[in-house]
Length: 183
Length: 136
Image 1 (cartoon, each protein chain N blue to C red):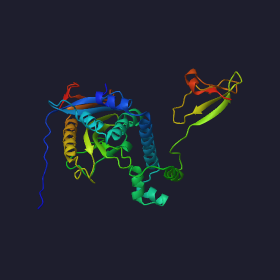
Image 2: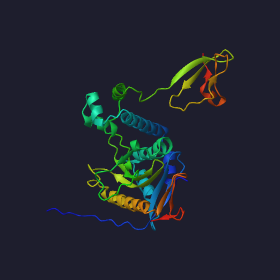
Image 3: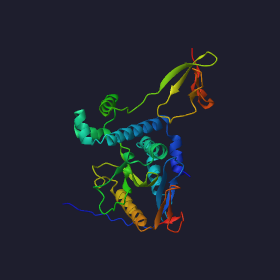
Image 4: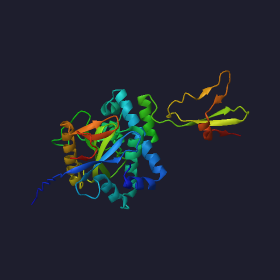
């Protein structure tokens, strides 16, 4: 007998906050659900930092994000893996790409989801261990759906101009110029 | 600002890990940019290399590690260097001492490094002096 469990994840109100703006070529944002103690990206890195099996890989992935993307190349397409076939209902909007940080070194088990706004602005979500062929078949399916939902709302906010890209300062602002972004 | 968690993990990350990751990213970006410049798809590139497209895909998606041989094969086909190895160049300083400096090809051009007029020795700004040392 087979059971089909459909997971529906409701994304509550969340804050878009700067995760890193010290890198030379890219500002990284993250999301923090209302009332949560920790943002999604810190929670992801901290979870695997304390796991002996993945400590080395989490160091590699972080170095890839902050050194390779942040300081050396920016969020160029070559380092960003886009999901074109797997994401249902996610509108594409010019340069916006939902995907994951493309760090795939042989058998690399970790995936970190991200939304590339420009080559200089990236929003990082959470992630996990990819143990299936697709995101849907992996145990990180929950994180995948959650990241898709965050991305959808952010893209929608950019499309209706609730959220504005300030390319000069590599930042995101609300329509009223505020940097306290609650979506 | 930088996330405290990120700062802590980065501080504990060995230098060799950072070097490895940066090299990996540089090579990946370089190959993909060369493919784009030469208007080659992974499929057409595979045909040129007499490889299966899936094999090229494995190189470019990291499923297979790059080896010196695979890089040499790609470099030969693309006709442009993928990686550069720094070289040490010898020269004679003003005080008639043999010296060396290392050429980092990936560094941006520094126009302040030039031959003084009428001189055959190279004037290296003070900030590069730690790289130059008296040879034998």
